[in-house]
Length: 594
Image: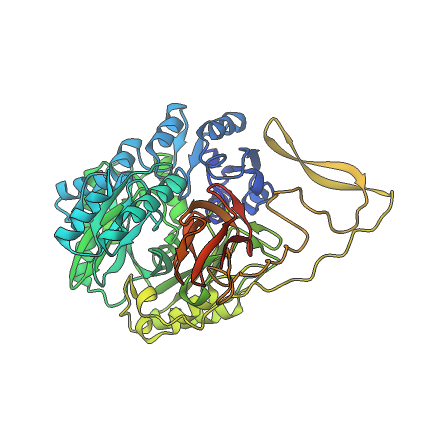
């Protein structure tokens, strides 16, 4: 078995891996950015090393900084989690090149399947048909237009080296192609470190169904079962469940066997997920995610296996220990992704900030996988997932009702969350009957009355004056390694504010300066404000230009998602107050219209 695992990630997945390692007696090493110095995964790990920087590119996507942490810690394995470097063959090769075990597939298999274009070719060679599309990287918007005119609109531009809806844009008409291509490439670069994108036909009413596969180094490959991930917004999953509702057993077996064929075709090892689109009784290969999925807990609940433990054992060279016939699936599991995001009447606006209160639900068949706790800050620079709420029931209806009860019990204060949207989804007759699709949330679900407000928490009292000194346990960094030391420090009372930019704060967050609920200023206002903290990536209008109500004025990136900031009044642009690269806060005015 492995001795010491470095988790090259953050948040919920880092916490998840740390806990399984601890159960197996494996030492853990966390890495962290400047903003994550006091993050939950850092507090739980046996050791922690600073990567420096704030953004993902400066920290969790800094290969050399991670290699330095491996060398300093003496870790013999690296678990990449999901996102960041989890599907980056160059990173995996850099790890294995140092004689360190990479908890994932071989770099060669990752290159084939991590690149969504080459994965289409591999699936075709295995006899598994994909969604109609182009199997070459896009070079120009004219290629998007030509494909749309040949196959019909809409079409989907997708990141070649990513997943999870990041870097995906749906193009409804030829005129939208240039802006959509540029935006998709920016998001792909920001989240996966690679800007390549490709094209696919956008199906009219599909369901997103994925198959969990595992393969060991002895040539054994199995499929554990499917997950339905059709409840999505912005092509990112909100609710996942297993097994898929209204899904015929013969299709389930055929899809599972197809997933195994795809895995074997690229010499796959460890955990992987083969994703399909299912419509009108047919299924199409979509892509293979060469990593653990965010939604893996629903499979764990149904098959009764710890998938992270399986990953670690396979990485250590152990066989699976079971075959396809040994797998038993019991009951039904549902997962809701609790994001720092305001449903905002269907607009789903990222809502970074500090969590001032976090109360997890409890009870039979309820599980919460969280990457945050009271006082932790959800930064604009990273993914907005706070926690995954997972329930198990003897059947789908039991699981659905249990999830609604658990959602009602969960309390998150300080930031807006997706909880109201989850409640609307699980209560809707379409979801109850299993008749939803990947386009259902945005096209048919009425969220016009659904919003989430960040509940305010009273500020902490001012620390008392005085020269008294007390013995406190504090954190210190020596050569990048994090230590806990005891120091005699001035007595500042029960509350000590965190350092600027730290991931944990003892004081209440600054209240938004207005405009937190929309894309611009108040109705009819000449002020165009941003609803959240983020970075301006593009300004779309110029001073003196005429604009219409609803016209995009600029593009704001927050939590790796691009959001159009629209004018809520028609008129002439009097003043532009931002430029690309500027960081703005909730309520900041970016333009004036008269």
